[in-house]
Length: 385
Image (tube, rainbow, N blue to C red; front, side, top):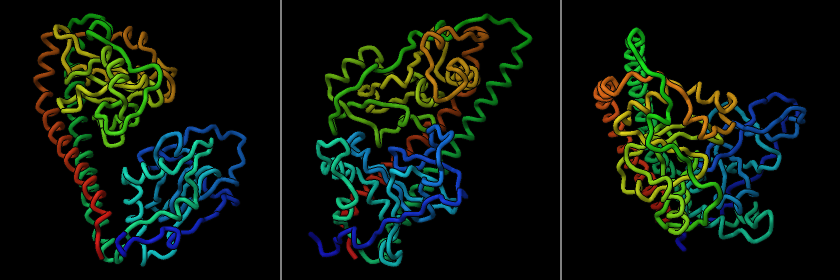
């Protein structure tokens, strides 16, 4: 092992800062993408004074979930606003930021190899075998603080470019939605038919109702809500399953470029247009994702996408008005819309298609940037002072 590999426990310590004065009210959870997320816990009547406070440059992690999700849920707080996490979570920080940069350490935690290491350390016990002592016993390369800062700057530059692209994607989508709304309002004085989404689609279905067997690096993807981000499928942290389990569900979903994805459970309303990527014909879904296939003589991909966006709040209402409810496929198929006729649909499609072309290019750039991030994380094992 290279000489710059050090025991992590010599550089970190636990923090026990409880919310005794009840000054912090923002309760968050930890996502599988290693980010804070809005908590869905019912805290009515809960004693919030026992919850743990996480401040800037402190980490929060959940050791108990490792054996269940096969990842190490850990997040670094990087802004000034403190948050609350479950009393069951562990909060820790580095001893000296001049020796170990917290962002550098978080990069190490983001490596897929680290998740596999944590999963390997788990035993068959209910709570798993990866705990604080196991974390402290981890060995990682700790080069000079100058080298750490250089690596962090390179990583953040990539992250910032992805964020800028995502902002542009949002602006472009808003432009397309504005065009759709303007044309729809202009059409209000003309004739239209009442149709259902089922009329506009050759198929509306969802993913597998049940679990599948994981197989690392199988190349067969089992996508869930968490993987639908900013109008695209993000494969970085997606589950990979056995070929047999994939084929069982893929016979029904049969994903193709131009299909529309709509999350219909867990978090309702995330959407994506399926692109022509090499992963597409090896992708299927958990039941939390619905697939809508435009009917060629009734609808078009981008028209259907904008239509769903336009009616998204109403669609969420079908599930009881909460993004945390379940949207039934029957309700989705029977959802009524004002249909302007195929000629009008074609005109809208021609108008917005160049905009979605630009969105697609930015999405491809982001995929390349994500690959760069993974390469940078992989290179950390070979970093020298």
